[in-house]
Length: 365
Image (tube, rainbow, N blue to C red; front, side):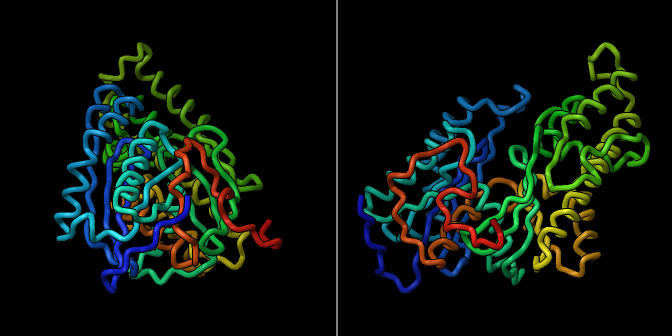
């Protein structure tokens, strides 16, 4: 299908993006220069009582929420759909039901208005977020990104828009998944990351000698399954029945703090290895939902400082899933010269950064 022409009735173009890769329904409008004109995020709460995200429930909730959310973001920006020049949507990776709902909704708007549509990779959106002009980071290529979220954990050398070198990734649980599972072991419910971080402030991070999987080993891969198992065994010493509702508060706080420190130590070690493989990196970046964790940020900031390079992290609202990052990733692609013609691109639960990108230069392959 040929690409519709970009609407040019205004001197400054506008892009509307939709994000529905997991359990947050988000919409944002950005100007072509990256100015955020409006943004909205609706977090689903029904999953809390179920102990985790249920894909079918999430997809239905996205479908119910999108019409009102799009209307709200347009109202905030004092715009109508006719004022939008390009539409974009997260098309992968993520939960396939949500991806289909969100990307199809954005495609429908684009087709109805005869506007172009851009398919956005969720991981690419996270790693490009710190370059958003309004953040004032002046972040230049190449830089190293530590992507840490509930579903992803990767070291990525960001050479330029569309050129990414994956230096390592998780071989089992992602960091955010480990946080949620340990929080559940401690009886903190879901989502567990913020609750565990809060509890950890009451504990000692050296109370228990927990393992640091892969620390000191070559490469940039991650493994958190063994750490999670060690925590479970530790908790069993205090709660052999597994009820998890009568753990001593101080014990739980010490476990939370010790676990959090172990994860931060592993991430710092992996960052050290990644920087050794990326000697030209101009900065160290942390992105993704777990990037909101202050202990993790501090550990990575110390690594960057020891290498004499700046450390960047998005503001907390842009660490978790949001549509601003999706819109900005689409704009980065536009500024790099890509033609917005993705209306036939299908949603996909797995979408490696290496696909649908220019060939990686030989020196980085």
